[in-house]
Amino acid sequence: MLTALTTTFVSMNIIEDLQWRYATKRYINQEVPPEKINVLLESIRLSATSLGLQPFEIYDVRSTELREKMREAAYNQPQLIEASHVFVFAVWTTVTEEMVDDYLQFVAKTRNRDIGQLEGFRKSIMGFLGNKDTQEIIKWSSNQAYIALGKAMAAAAQLRVDSTPMEGFNRQKVDELLNLQSKNLHAAVILTVGYRDVENDPIVNAQKVRKPIHQIHHII
Ligand SMILES: Cc1cc2nc3c(=O)[nH]c(=O)nc-3n(C[C@H](O)[C@H](O)[C@H](O)COP(=O)(O)O)c2cc1C
Image 1: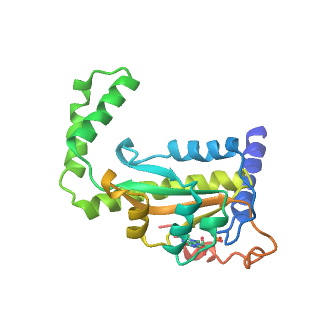
Image 2: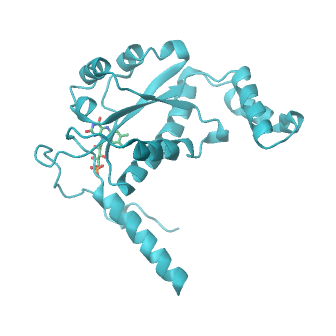
């Protein structure tokens, strides 16, 4: 009985959180406190990734000058300037044997295992990624970044912090602005976070547009 009640309570909260959130268009000038930002970053860090490789890094853009330039590269979307924080998910463009070896060393050390025991794992990683070209690696690493993006959005909603997932920007320009190419990284997606501007956001009270569940859920 207690378990059933607890489950209902928890799942209702999740749905309320997800109903509350929306892709915020305008933010007020208010900073999200560091303890909440840390939770968002931790939700990204703890995200599941293919083979555990975590093939992305987060660029937390604080410079007003850079943000202005990013806004220009993002069809002038005001979130880039108004949001408290702008996180760029910069994904791997390449996976070298050296990177895989570094990862395996890390796994071995963390789990107190002999590196030799991970030889089979090394072979499967190289078998899966070794022959992929740059575009395929970017696709694969971006997939991992998007999972983490979803986690951060859900965590933000739970904390009653607004957020916007953003693909509406020129990736090449953002790569140039953040000098990502030289680090073998590529801007995949952006997450802005802050607090909604109730006065000026045109969609702050808009009804959610979602298909009914029977159109997307098929039991076979
Ligand atoms: C990957 C992705 C990219 C998006 N890019 C933008 C964007 O560049 N600018 C924007 O205002 N909204 C962007 N959105 C928001 C979507 O338009 C929005 O999530 C969708 O219309 C559903 O509405 P809701 O999230 O407000 O419920 C993006 C959403 C996703 C998931």
